[in-house]
Image (cartoon, rainbow, N blue to C red):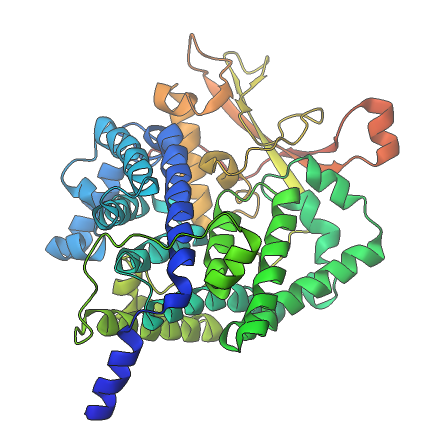
Length: 484
């Protein structure tokens, strides 16, 4: 027992190497929360509002019917109190205000608690539109940050290192062991820039690089994700190397991809691979240590060690689940109750690579003869649409459309609900579009056409002025409007 008490005392003792790092991390986290809530405010009523694609109220009613009162704990959300449009939109803008408060260091612990509670609430009612891995990453980072307000102790720094390790290493492991020949054959980057969900023009330029360089980049990606993460737990020179390499690859991704705020959050986590001495070298004007805004956590407290035990054990169990692909374990494991709070997730970003890009065009008609297309805000609808830089905003509807062509059941469900809302000209849903050709009267008929899209070569682009080359594939099969 004295040995355990001594270990806990050492783990909970403040680590003075990370005072300035913590200050900068909390400011970056505030900006990332602001981006996340602003992105939510732009789409939330159309996605899960009262007459959105997948209304939150219907989801909650189904959860209550299935789980009874346990639903409140299994799907923790403030929107159990009210999930109307004004509540969803009001909570989005409240999150923006809280993030601004955190940025200016106003009652930071309260701001962090409320930010976590609000974003967890959206995560729960957002359904497929909030099912991405960066939601878990933001929630777990934000949860750990609640305790950082007291100052960075060794236990909290370890939890942030463990989170970054899981993000990076498991993403590489999923690529290597997932059986995708484009990763094992080092051809993934031959397709990635063209087939990713929402490229910007940097992707077109990257796609023109020579094949040997793209293959070398694929190999480097696997090395950075599979080997470099272990440097996180090694002495300072190795950690500095890991930070530099990881931040560098995130900047390259941002130069070629619209991946919302996930790259910024990864860079923020990399700060804890540095220390105050390194930060002062890079930012010599940042010399002041952060001001304490809350009393330090008593070293004898078991709150943080118990939380650390839950986070680590849950993440180990979910990693085991991912490796074994044991669906029965996934359904029954108690750790999934922890995951319901956005904690302990596994990460496997782009474990498989699409080798072909399909774009879907939704058209409507009053008479079945003259068809007009719905235009989306961010995805390419026409060959002449130049990919736009929209990062760090996260347009969830346009992003989700990328998943529809493989025709997984969950995507058929929400896509059918989208068609149903368009067929009835629901204003909250049509507001998500760039152009609704049926603003005056809902269409009588809908159809979905599929096209294969490829980047134009430099010569083709010079001749036509178009970034894309489109090939018509036909009417998209097995799609019909479904009532949510």
